[in-house]
Length: 444
Image (cartoon, rainbow, N blue to C red; front, side, top):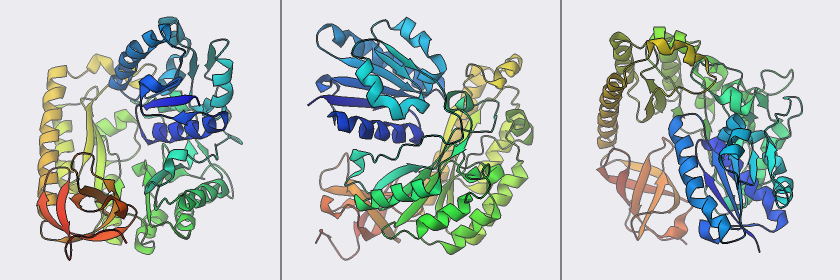
Protein backbone atom coordinates (compact mmCIF):
# COMPACT_ATOMS: atom_id res chain seq x y z
CA UNK A 1 0.00 0.00 0.00
CA UNK A 2 1.27 3.54 -0.68
CA UNK A 3 2.65 5.40 2.33
CA UNK A 4 2.38 9.09 3.16
CA UNK A 5 4.75 11.09 5.34
CA UNK A 6 3.50 14.50 6.49
CA UNK A 7 5.97 16.95 8.03
CA UNK A 8 4.17 19.71 9.93
CA UNK A 9 5.63 23.09 10.81
CA UNK A 10 3.69 25.74 12.72
CA UNK A 11 0.54 26.11 14.75
CA UNK A 12 -2.33 23.90 15.87
CA UNK A 13 -4.23 24.79 12.71
CA UNK A 14 -1.44 23.21 10.67
CA UNK A 15 -1.46 20.11 12.84
CA UNK A 16 -5.21 19.87 12.38
CA UNK A 17 -4.92 20.31 8.61
CA UNK A 18 -2.32 17.54 8.51
CA UNK A 19 -4.79 15.26 10.25
CA UNK A 20 -7.45 16.14 7.68
CA UNK A 21 -5.01 15.28 4.89
CA UNK A 22 -4.37 11.88 6.42
CA UNK A 23 -8.13 11.37 6.58
CA UNK A 24 -8.62 12.49 2.96
CA UNK A 25 -5.85 10.22 1.67
CA UNK A 26 -6.96 7.10 3.56
CA UNK A 27 -9.71 6.13 1.04
CA UNK A 28 -7.04 6.19 -1.68
CA UNK A 29 -5.11 3.58 0.26
CA UNK A 30 -2.42 5.81 1.74
CA UNK A 31 -1.07 4.61 5.08
CA UNK A 32 0.72 7.12 7.34
CA UNK A 33 4.39 6.47 8.05
CA UNK A 34 6.87 8.12 10.42
CA UNK A 35 9.79 7.19 8.15
CA UNK A 36 10.30 9.68 5.33
CA UNK A 37 12.55 7.20 3.52
CA UNK A 38 9.66 4.71 3.42
CA UNK A 39 7.15 7.17 1.91
CA UNK A 40 5.67 7.27 -1.59
CA UNK A 41 4.13 10.68 -0.90
CA UNK A 42 5.76 13.42 1.19
CA UNK A 43 3.77 16.52 2.18
CA UNK A 44 5.40 19.46 3.98
CA UNK A 45 2.70 21.49 5.75
CA UNK A 46 4.20 24.92 6.28
CA UNK A 47 4.00 27.99 8.50
CA UNK A 48 4.82 31.55 7.47
CA UNK A 49 4.16 33.43 10.71
CA UNK A 50 7.92 33.89 11.19
CA UNK A 51 11.00 33.48 9.03
CA UNK A 52 12.46 30.45 10.82
CA UNK A 53 9.71 27.94 9.83
CA UNK A 54 10.22 29.02 6.21
CA UNK A 55 13.91 28.29 6.52
CA UNK A 56 13.05 24.83 7.85
CA UNK A 57 10.92 24.20 4.76
CA UNK A 58 13.75 24.95 2.36
CA UNK A 59 16.18 22.86 4.41
CA UNK A 60 13.73 19.93 4.35
CA UNK A 61 13.14 20.19 0.60
CA UNK A 62 16.88 20.30 0.03
CA UNK A 63 17.14 16.90 1.73
CA UNK A 64 14.07 15.16 0.26
CA UNK A 65 13.86 16.27 -3.38
CA UNK A 66 17.13 14.57 -4.46
CA UNK A 67 15.53 11.24 -3.52
CA UNK A 68 13.22 11.61 -6.54
CA UNK A 69 16.23 10.73 -8.70
CA UNK A 70 16.54 7.25 -7.17
CA UNK A 71 12.97 6.19 -6.35
CA UNK A 72 9.35 6.97 -7.27
CA UNK A 73 8.27 9.81 -4.99
CA UNK A 74 5.66 12.57 -5.02
CA UNK A 75 6.55 15.69 -3.01
CA UNK A 76 4.07 18.43 -2.07
CA UNK A 77 4.26 21.72 -0.18
CA UNK A 78 1.08 22.74 1.64
CA UNK A 79 0.01 25.38 4.15
CA UNK A 80 0.74 29.05 4.59
CA UNK A 81 4.07 29.32 2.77
CA UNK A 82 2.47 27.54 -0.19
CA UNK A 83 -0.40 30.04 -0.11
CA UNK A 84 1.92 33.02 0.16
CA UNK A 85 4.60 32.05 -2.38
CA UNK A 86 2.65 29.78 -4.72
CA UNK A 87 4.38 29.65 -8.10
CA UNK A 88 7.62 31.01 -6.68
CA UNK A 89 8.15 27.67 -4.95
CA UNK A 90 7.65 25.81 -8.24
CA UNK A 91 10.25 28.03 -9.91
CA UNK A 92 12.73 27.46 -7.10
CA UNK A 93 12.20 23.67 -7.07
CA UNK A 94 11.58 22.34 -10.62
CA UNK A 95 11.13 18.74 -9.39
CA UNK A 96 8.40 19.64 -6.88
CA UNK A 97 5.07 18.01 -7.82
CA UNK A 98 2.35 19.85 -5.90
CA UNK A 99 1.82 23.19 -4.11
CA UNK A 100 -1.45 24.02 -2.36
CA UNK A 101 -2.79 26.37 0.29
CA UNK A 102 -4.93 25.71 3.39
CA UNK A 103 -8.24 26.12 1.53
CA UNK A 104 -7.30 23.22 -0.77
CA UNK A 105 -6.80 20.64 1.99
CA UNK A 106 -10.20 19.08 1.24
CA UNK A 107 -9.07 18.39 -2.34
CA UNK A 108 -5.74 16.77 -1.49
CA UNK A 109 -6.70 13.30 -2.73
CA UNK A 110 -7.67 14.58 -6.20
CA UNK A 111 -4.60 16.81 -6.41
CA UNK A 112 -2.24 13.96 -5.52
CA UNK A 113 -3.81 11.83 -8.25
CA UNK A 114 -3.40 14.63 -10.81
CA UNK A 115 0.20 15.25 -9.72
CA UNK A 116 1.14 11.82 -11.04
CA UNK A 117 0.94 13.20 -14.57
CA UNK A 118 1.50 16.96 -14.20
CA UNK A 119 2.46 19.58 -11.65
CA UNK A 120 -0.40 21.07 -9.63
CA UNK A 121 -0.72 24.53 -8.08
CA UNK A 122 -3.85 25.36 -6.05
CA UNK A 123 -3.86 28.52 -3.95
CA UNK A 124 -7.43 29.67 -4.59
CA UNK A 125 -9.51 30.90 -1.67
CA UNK A 126 -13.08 29.76 -1.14
CA UNK A 127 -15.63 32.41 -0.22
CA UNK A 128 -16.60 32.59 3.43
CA UNK A 129 -20.25 31.69 2.71
CA UNK A 130 -20.67 27.94 2.82
CA UNK A 131 -16.97 27.31 3.31
CA UNK A 132 -16.40 23.53 2.90
CA UNK A 133 -14.99 22.47 6.27
CA UNK A 134 -13.80 18.88 6.22
CA UNK A 135 -15.72 16.44 8.41
CA UNK A 136 -13.32 13.49 8.02
CA UNK A 137 -11.79 12.28 11.29
CA UNK A 138 -8.02 12.08 11.54
CA UNK A 139 -7.21 8.33 11.70
CA UNK A 140 -4.27 9.13 14.00
CA UNK A 141 -6.74 10.44 16.62
CA UNK A 142 -7.81 6.89 17.46
CA UNK A 143 -6.45 5.95 20.85
CA UNK A 144 -5.17 9.45 21.62
CA UNK A 145 -6.29 11.29 24.74
CA UNK A 146 -6.63 14.73 23.11
CA UNK A 147 -7.54 16.09 19.72
CA UNK A 148 -8.05 19.43 17.95
CA UNK A 149 -11.36 20.47 16.39
CA UNK A 150 -11.45 23.53 14.17
CA UNK A 151 -14.36 25.91 14.69
CA UNK A 152 -13.35 28.66 12.26
CA UNK A 153 -10.83 29.49 9.57
CA UNK A 154 -9.15 32.76 8.63
CA UNK A 155 -9.09 36.07 10.48
CA UNK A 156 -10.78 39.46 10.05
CA UNK A 157 -8.30 41.28 12.29
CA UNK A 158 -5.51 43.13 10.58
CA UNK A 159 -2.72 43.19 13.12
CA UNK A 160 0.14 45.00 11.43
CA UNK A 161 2.67 42.21 12.11
CA UNK A 162 0.51 39.28 11.03
CA UNK A 163 0.38 37.47 7.70
CA UNK A 164 -2.50 35.12 8.62
CA UNK A 165 -5.23 37.08 6.73
CA UNK A 166 -3.04 36.80 3.62
CA UNK A 167 -2.40 33.08 3.96
CA UNK A 168 -5.73 31.86 5.42
CA UNK A 169 -8.19 34.47 4.18
CA UNK A 170 -11.18 36.07 5.85
CA UNK A 171 -12.81 34.56 8.89
CA UNK A 172 -15.50 31.93 8.40
CA UNK A 173 -17.23 30.14 11.30
CA UNK A 174 -17.94 26.44 10.97
CA UNK A 175 -21.56 25.34 11.49
CA UNK A 176 -22.09 24.21 15.07
CA UNK A 177 -23.71 20.92 14.08
CA UNK A 178 -20.53 19.94 12.19
CA UNK A 179 -18.37 20.82 15.19
CA UNK A 180 -20.50 18.84 17.62
CA UNK A 181 -20.63 15.86 15.26
CA UNK A 182 -16.84 15.83 15.00
CA UNK A 183 -16.48 16.05 18.77
CA UNK A 184 -18.87 13.11 19.18
CA UNK A 185 -16.93 11.14 16.57
CA UNK A 186 -13.64 11.77 18.33
CA UNK A 187 -15.12 10.76 21.69
CA UNK A 188 -16.20 7.56 19.98
CA UNK A 189 -12.55 6.98 19.05
CA UNK A 190 -11.49 7.32 22.68
CA UNK A 191 -10.58 11.02 22.77
CA UNK A 192 -11.20 12.63 26.17
CA UNK A 193 -9.77 16.13 25.75
CA UNK A 194 -11.06 18.49 23.05
CA UNK A 195 -9.21 21.64 22.00
CA UNK A 196 -11.30 24.01 19.89
CA UNK A 197 -9.08 25.95 17.49
CA UNK A 198 -9.26 28.94 15.21
CA UNK A 199 -7.32 32.12 14.53
CA UNK A 200 -9.72 34.00 16.83
CA UNK A 201 -12.13 31.64 18.56
CA UNK A 202 -13.78 34.42 20.58
CA UNK A 203 -15.36 35.93 17.46
CA UNK A 204 -16.95 32.62 16.47
CA UNK A 205 -20.43 33.04 15.01
CA UNK A 206 -20.56 36.83 15.27
CA UNK A 207 -20.75 37.39 11.49
CA UNK A 208 -23.75 35.11 10.91
CA UNK A 209 -27.17 36.05 12.34
CA UNK A 210 -28.65 33.24 14.42
CA UNK A 211 -25.37 31.35 14.78
CA UNK A 212 -24.33 30.35 18.32
CA UNK A 213 -21.76 32.54 20.02
CA UNK A 214 -18.49 31.06 21.23
CA UNK A 215 -19.83 30.90 24.79
CA UNK A 216 -22.91 29.01 23.61
CA UNK A 217 -20.73 26.62 21.63
CA UNK A 218 -18.63 25.92 24.73
CA UNK A 219 -21.77 24.99 26.64
CA UNK A 220 -22.92 22.63 23.87
CA UNK A 221 -19.54 20.87 23.73
CA UNK A 222 -19.57 20.63 27.54
CA UNK A 223 -22.87 18.75 27.36
CA UNK A 224 -21.45 15.95 25.18
CA UNK A 225 -21.02 12.75 27.16
CA UNK A 226 -17.42 11.52 27.14
CA UNK A 227 -15.80 14.94 26.86
CA UNK A 228 -13.76 15.38 30.01
CA UNK A 229 -11.60 18.45 29.30
CA UNK A 230 -12.22 21.43 27.01
CA UNK A 231 -9.49 23.79 25.91
CA UNK A 232 -9.38 26.37 23.15
CA UNK A 233 -6.93 28.54 21.24
CA UNK A 234 -6.31 31.21 20.07
CA UNK A 235 -8.13 34.02 21.84
CA UNK A 236 -8.04 37.73 21.06
CA UNK A 237 -8.26 39.83 24.26
CA UNK A 238 -10.48 42.40 22.54
CA UNK A 239 -13.21 39.82 21.96
CA UNK A 240 -13.16 38.08 25.35
CA UNK A 241 -16.72 38.76 26.50
CA UNK A 242 -18.37 38.35 29.86
CA UNK A 243 -20.38 35.43 28.48
CA UNK A 244 -17.17 33.45 27.97
CA UNK A 245 -15.89 34.51 31.40
CA UNK A 246 -19.12 33.15 32.90
CA UNK A 247 -18.37 29.75 31.38
CA UNK A 248 -15.43 29.42 33.76
CA UNK A 249 -17.82 29.71 36.67
CA UNK A 250 -20.36 27.29 35.19
CA UNK A 251 -18.50 24.62 33.20
CA UNK A 252 -16.20 22.35 35.25
CA UNK A 253 -14.86 20.58 32.15
CA UNK A 254 -13.42 23.87 30.86
CA UNK A 255 -9.71 23.82 31.66
CA UNK A 256 -8.28 26.23 34.22
CA UNK A 257 -5.68 27.49 31.78
CA UNK A 258 -5.91 30.04 28.98
CA UNK A 259 -3.41 31.08 26.36
CA UNK A 260 -4.22 34.76 25.84
CA UNK A 261 -1.71 36.51 23.53
CA UNK A 262 -0.85 40.02 24.68
CA UNK A 263 2.14 40.72 22.35
CA UNK A 264 3.20 43.85 24.29
CA UNK A 265 2.55 45.59 27.59
CA UNK A 266 2.82 49.05 26.04
CA UNK A 267 -0.29 50.89 24.89
CA UNK A 268 1.78 52.76 22.32
CA UNK A 269 3.10 49.55 20.78
CA UNK A 270 -0.33 47.89 20.93
CA UNK A 271 -1.74 50.79 18.91
CA UNK A 272 1.02 50.41 16.32
CA UNK A 273 0.25 46.69 16.17
CA UNK A 274 -3.48 47.49 15.75
CA UNK A 275 -4.45 45.14 18.54
CA UNK A 276 -7.43 47.32 19.60
CA UNK A 277 -7.12 46.81 23.34
CA UNK A 278 -5.12 48.54 26.03
CA UNK A 279 -2.92 47.23 28.81
CA UNK A 280 -5.71 48.12 31.27
CA UNK A 281 -8.29 46.19 29.24
CA UNK A 282 -6.05 43.13 29.14
CA UNK A 283 -5.53 43.21 32.89
CA UNK A 284 -9.28 43.65 33.38
CA UNK A 285 -9.91 40.45 31.41
CA UNK A 286 -7.35 38.59 33.53
CA UNK A 287 -8.99 39.86 36.73
CA UNK A 288 -12.47 38.79 35.60
CA UNK A 289 -11.28 35.31 34.63
CA UNK A 290 -9.53 34.81 37.96
CA UNK A 291 -12.67 35.96 39.78
CA UNK A 292 -14.67 33.32 37.91
CA UNK A 293 -12.02 30.59 38.37
CA UNK A 294 -9.47 31.44 41.10
CA UNK A 295 -7.04 28.67 40.10
CA UNK A 296 -6.74 30.00 36.51
CA UNK A 297 -3.27 30.38 35.09
CA UNK A 298 -2.24 32.09 31.90
CA UNK A 299 0.27 31.77 29.11
CA UNK A 300 0.81 34.30 26.36
CA UNK A 301 2.74 35.48 23.29
CA UNK A 302 5.23 38.35 23.17
CA UNK A 303 6.73 40.11 20.17
CA UNK A 304 9.90 41.90 21.22
CA UNK A 305 11.54 44.64 19.18
CA UNK A 306 8.48 45.70 17.20
CA UNK A 307 9.42 48.72 15.05
CA UNK A 308 9.52 51.83 17.22
CA UNK A 309 9.61 49.91 20.52
CA UNK A 310 11.52 52.07 23.01
CA UNK A 311 13.05 51.18 26.36
CA UNK A 312 9.98 52.50 28.19
CA UNK A 313 7.72 50.29 26.05
CA UNK A 314 9.77 47.22 26.84
CA UNK A 315 9.67 48.06 30.54
CA UNK A 316 5.87 48.18 30.27
CA UNK A 317 6.00 44.64 28.91
CA UNK A 318 8.19 43.49 31.78
CA UNK A 319 5.89 45.01 34.40
CA UNK A 320 2.86 43.43 32.72
CA UNK A 321 4.59 40.06 32.90
CA UNK A 322 5.02 40.49 36.64
CA UNK A 323 1.47 41.79 37.10
CA UNK A 324 -0.09 38.72 35.49
CA UNK A 325 2.68 36.26 36.47
CA UNK A 326 2.38 34.28 33.27
CA UNK A 327 3.27 30.63 33.74
CA UNK A 328 4.60 30.29 30.21
CA UNK A 329 5.02 32.30 27.05
CA UNK A 330 6.09 32.11 23.44
CA UNK A 331 8.38 35.07 22.84
CA UNK A 332 10.18 36.09 19.67
CA UNK A 333 11.98 39.01 18.13
CA UNK A 334 9.84 40.84 15.58
CA UNK A 335 10.08 39.10 12.20
CA UNK A 336 9.06 41.26 9.22
CA UNK A 337 6.70 39.32 6.96
CA UNK A 338 6.06 40.05 3.27
CA UNK A 339 3.00 42.17 2.57
CA UNK A 340 2.25 43.09 6.20
CA UNK A 341 1.61 46.74 7.20
CA UNK A 342 4.47 46.62 9.71
CA UNK A 343 6.91 46.81 6.80
CA UNK A 344 5.98 50.49 6.49
CA UNK A 345 7.39 51.01 9.99
CA UNK A 346 10.83 49.56 9.29
CA UNK A 347 12.48 52.99 9.27
CA UNK A 348 12.04 52.70 13.05
CA UNK A 349 13.43 49.16 13.24
CA UNK A 350 14.91 48.19 16.59
CA UNK A 351 18.60 47.20 16.23
CA UNK A 352 18.96 43.43 16.33
CA UNK A 353 21.35 43.50 19.28
CA UNK A 354 18.93 45.61 21.32
CA UNK A 355 16.00 43.35 20.47
CA UNK A 356 18.01 40.24 21.34
CA UNK A 357 19.06 41.65 24.70
CA UNK A 358 15.45 42.56 25.53
CA UNK A 359 14.25 39.12 24.48
CA UNK A 360 16.85 37.39 26.63
CA UNK A 361 15.89 39.48 29.64
CA UNK A 362 12.20 38.69 29.15
CA UNK A 363 12.85 34.97 28.70
CA UNK A 364 15.04 34.88 31.81
CA UNK A 365 12.26 36.47 33.84
CA UNK A 366 9.71 34.10 32.35
CA UNK A 367 11.82 31.14 33.41
CA UNK A 368 12.02 32.54 36.95
CA UNK A 369 8.23 32.88 37.10
CA UNK A 370 7.74 29.31 35.91
CA UNK A 371 10.21 27.92 38.44
CA UNK A 372 8.52 29.89 41.25
CA UNK A 373 5.06 28.69 40.24
CA UNK A 374 6.16 25.07 39.97
CA UNK A 375 8.13 25.14 43.23
CA UNK A 376 4.93 26.15 45.03
CA UNK A 377 3.33 22.90 43.83
CA UNK A 378 5.85 20.56 45.48
CA UNK A 379 4.16 18.26 48.03
CA UNK A 380 0.72 19.10 46.57
CA UNK A 381 -1.47 16.38 45.07
CA UNK A 382 -2.71 17.14 41.56
CA UNK A 383 -5.34 15.44 39.42
CA UNK A 384 -3.67 14.37 36.16
CA UNK A 385 -5.13 13.08 32.90
CA UNK A 386 -2.59 10.55 31.62
CA UNK A 387 -1.54 11.10 28.00
CA UNK A 388 0.86 8.18 27.55
CA UNK A 389 4.45 7.05 28.06
CA UNK A 390 7.21 9.60 28.49
CA UNK A 391 9.28 10.17 25.38
CA UNK A 392 12.49 10.14 27.41
CA UNK A 393 12.18 7.87 30.47
CA UNK A 394 11.31 4.19 30.39
CA UNK A 395 8.68 3.20 32.93
CA UNK A 396 7.47 6.79 33.22
CA UNK A 397 4.17 8.18 31.98
CA UNK A 398 3.08 11.78 31.55
CA UNK A 399 -0.11 13.75 31.72
CA UNK A 400 -1.53 17.22 32.25
CA UNK A 401 -3.54 18.91 34.94
CA UNK A 402 -6.50 21.14 34.19
CA UNK A 403 -4.07 24.05 34.56
CA UNK A 404 -1.96 22.58 31.72
CA UNK A 405 0.93 21.47 33.92
CA UNK A 406 2.89 18.55 32.49
CA UNK A 407 3.56 15.92 35.17
CA UNK A 408 5.86 12.89 34.76
CA UNK A 409 5.61 9.94 37.13
CA UNK A 410 6.29 6.17 37.23
CA UNK A 411 3.32 4.24 35.86
CA UNK A 412 1.85 1.84 33.34
CA UNK A 413 1.37 3.23 29.79
CA UNK A 414 -2.01 1.50 29.76
CA UNK A 415 -3.20 4.25 32.09
CA UNK A 416 -3.54 6.57 29.08
CA UNK A 417 -6.89 8.35 29.16
CA UNK A 418 -7.39 7.86 32.90
CA UNK A 419 -7.30 10.37 35.74
CA UNK A 420 -4.84 9.73 38.58
CA UNK A 421 -3.85 11.65 41.70
CA UNK A 422 -0.15 12.51 41.68
CA UNK A 423 1.86 14.03 44.52
CA UNK A 424 4.47 16.47 43.17
CA UNK A 425 7.97 15.61 44.37
CA UNK A 426 10.18 17.82 42.17
CA UNK A 427 9.71 20.99 40.15
CA UNK A 428 11.46 22.07 36.98
CA UNK A 429 10.99 25.09 34.73
CA UNK A 430 8.72 23.32 32.25
CA UNK A 431 7.55 20.12 33.95
CA UNK A 432 6.79 18.51 37.30
CA UNK A 433 7.84 15.13 38.67
CA UNK A 434 5.66 13.12 41.01
CA UNK A 435 4.42 9.84 42.40
CA UNK A 436 0.95 8.35 42.29
CA UNK A 437 -0.77 8.77 45.64
CA UNK A 438 -1.03 5.42 47.37
CA UNK A 439 1.93 3.83 45.61
CA UNK A 440 2.44 2.48 42.12
CA UNK A 441 -0.71 2.42 40.05
CA UNK A 442 -1.27 0.07 37.13
CA UNK A 443 -4.13 -0.03 34.69
CA UNK A 444 -7.03 -2.36 35.48
